[in-house]
Length: 128
View (spheres, rainbow, N blue to C red):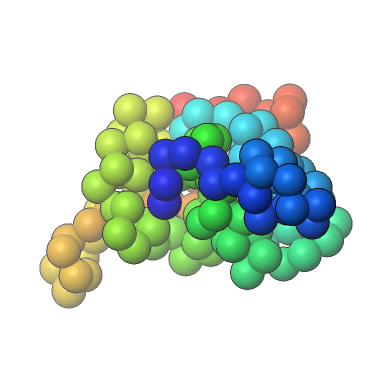
């Protein structure tokens, strides 16, 4: 995942302009409180359009400018290729993690989805 937002993949083709759907996905990612996560499917459901794959595509192309580590896979596995960077963010923010079993490749933890998942309600305080 790039740290910079890519330019030019918009419907209008104007450099530096994001497609409208991408802007909405990124806006949701910015709403997720530190220490909480939403799945790709949760984001699509929140927006009322698209699906997990579309959200994942937006995050892969444009997510470097937002807290990308807060939009995750439903199984709680860390994003392949970005596991250690994401893990640093999760630990810094106090995101609930489940320790990996011995059989897990690389012994990386997973997100504790039942505790980390945010339902989009701004009045719900982060986990404790």
